[in-house]
Image (tube, rainbow, N blue to C red; front, top):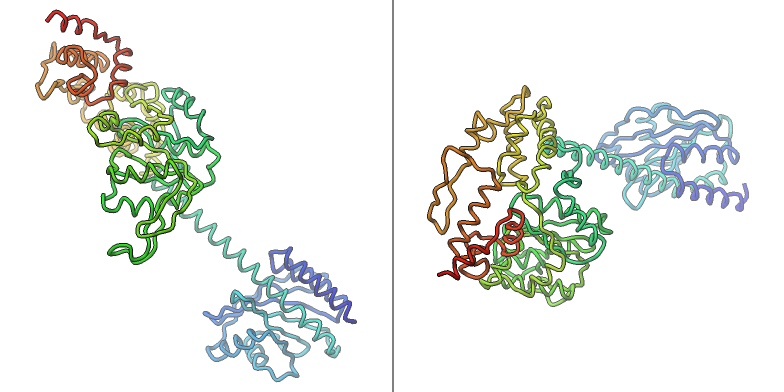
Amino acid sequence: MNHLAMDDLAYRAWQEACRVTEIETYATSLADLLADALPLWAVAIYEFEPQSRSLIRLCAIRPGHPAEAPLTRARCSPTQGQRLLEWIKLGELATETTESPAWSVLCEVLPAFGADMLVGGLASPRNVYGLLVLELRKGHALQEVTRAMVAKLLEPFGVALENTQRLRALGKQAKTAEADKAGLLARLGRDEIVDEVVGVEGGLREVYRRIERVCDSDLPILILGETGSGKEVLAREIHQRSSREDAPFIRVNCGAIAPELIDSELFGHEKGSFTGATTQRRGWFERANGGSLFLDEVGELPLAAQVRLLRVLQDGVIQRVGGEDEFQVDVRVIAATHRDLHMMIADGRFREDLWYRLASFPVQLPPLRERPEDIPALARHFARRAARRFGQRLCLPGPEALRQLVDYPWPGNVRELAAVIDRAVILGNGEELAVAQALGGGRPTETAAIFSVAPTVSGTQIPPASRSVFLTLDAAMRHHIEQVLAHTKGRIDGPHGAARVLAINPHTLRARMRKLDVSWNAFRRNEDAE
């Protein structure tokens, strides 16, 4: 074979190494090419594992024949393994006539290894080791040109072996990740990691129509809603519907961070910037770069941290604690709170300029009691999830159970409903959904009595009209608001207004009064008469 033909064969070997990811496919295509250039009987590829000192035959190919099944492992002694590894790293060729330390090892370890064979060491920069074994037809002398040609093939064969090992490792990682995900979903009782949103076509219809307008923008969003109403689920939905869906979604509970650690958590710190800062740390803004940062309970942030948050919202620039360099970040901020930020602004506990930045697009998430049409679907959803989670037979709520659930006021909102259904599944023991027991009473009247609490105004209990009659939730709320308006002489705003007494936003109170058909004109007339 001339040099031009040898170069062409080496080029084809590199071309196949870059194209093919399975070593068996690669060896098969190269065996056909080699059979045209030399008296080749068979080609075999072995992988060598230094830790276990094992040789594993990955494939054995005879040109024009199907591949043979791989053999079992062949293990070397510690001395044999060390000698073989040192020789493989040299990337040399060995035959029966060469004085190679590897030849005697292979004759002792591998069956049917011996004369008419040419073996080369395969080593990659990433510490992947193996052997290329060529068996020539009997009676053909090994020529120097053949040795030179095979020597040029060792490097592309080593690359092909490394590609195969990488693909195998990725496959193992994928299987491990799938198994971990399946285990996590089983523990959570879910089909997917992200919570399913129930109510998009029901009580949350207007909310979703509103957020669809801004999902693809970078405008900050402020979600207002009671505890347990599903603010995080809504924030994740906003992220999933945006162009940032493939980027990180980071959730930070601002109320769970110690005040002295707020800056470090949000913006990161440099090594040695304070006692205990033994390494550099990226903050949540850096980790969310390119994606969305969900600041849950943003109303709990101290005033000093609010100033620094305002700067990030204005300039998109952060600075680690103890650092001098500034970093530009591209983060979409979604904030949420159950607090009345207007009242906090009036009290000096929340910055008004931060409110204007965060509330560029406020979203009011209604509590569960204001969307009772969603309760049946939510109950069925949580029942399915709990059945998977606890390994129980699926029992869905019947008409009577649904009536009890709809009649209950749900002060803990969706989070409380999920906990009640979990209890109902456990108490029912796979035979029924024990909703009445889970709510705390054996009969609906007892359940209602448990949650029938006389309203109070400024700490003074207001006696109900009749202890023998239970009002509907709307009627009780209307009666309570009217009594507070009488107490405040029709005032809604201000430090002595009804909104302050009820601990509710004035705008929210007016909206609720319109819904309940409560008029404050009569109370104002009473004030004028005085």
